[in-house]
Image (cartoon, helix red, strand yellow):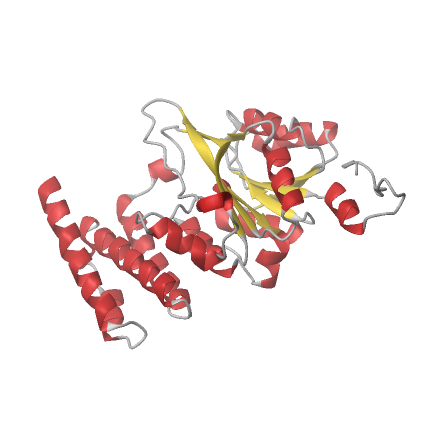
Length: 335
């Protein structure tokens, strides 16, 4: 059997058309890039995408009201590459930009890229090869490398034995064994139908939107493939959105994210997954509340509601209390 990505029909050695092979040959990746005032970095990003070794791409550039030359750069590239689609809109943040991209996309799988980062040349080929082996994959979790000075320690996934496919709940449990659940939206590729069928869009108007969106997306996935293959280059720059955030607003948003995420967590039937995730949420909420000194502005109503809730066992609540005081001691020692 020969795999021909550019052909509409693939014929086996017996001369019989294989419908599944035809679909795989035409597998389309939609790459969504929110853009806001990144003229200095945008060409580098776009070059990494248009020069992918896998060519069947739909490249969606969502210009989020840029006031520099970002739109002009997008136009220049679209004039020489007909795979590029430009959406020009008023500024409303990356969440809405990604949502618009998801609705516009027609690909089988969606890849998110930030406009100041790049992806390695064989990224889409790598994803294609794994999807070809397992056509039912909902999400492929991959890895990235830091580019720039003062690189943080690399964070890697826990990999299942035999590289088997995991359900969303199994994936969450495996990662939370080491109290980690990586939420960078650009770290993975997603089946588009998974997002549309489950109404998985980003909450607009908040920071840390991926800390809410990504875990909920994992919860809805039936099949996840995990690898620590590096496909993404994350550039560290001092004036990025995440590095210029107001710390108080950042902590306020984390409290909102935790409250929203708990609403989905309480519906989980897998008790082990439910327990691991709610403990992680309580821990993140507690740290943000204390480090942000939110007690000056509001009460920890989320924690009150959690301890009064009948959705979680007494054992889980005791574990949460122990986590709370353990983290409190750590913060005290840091001071």
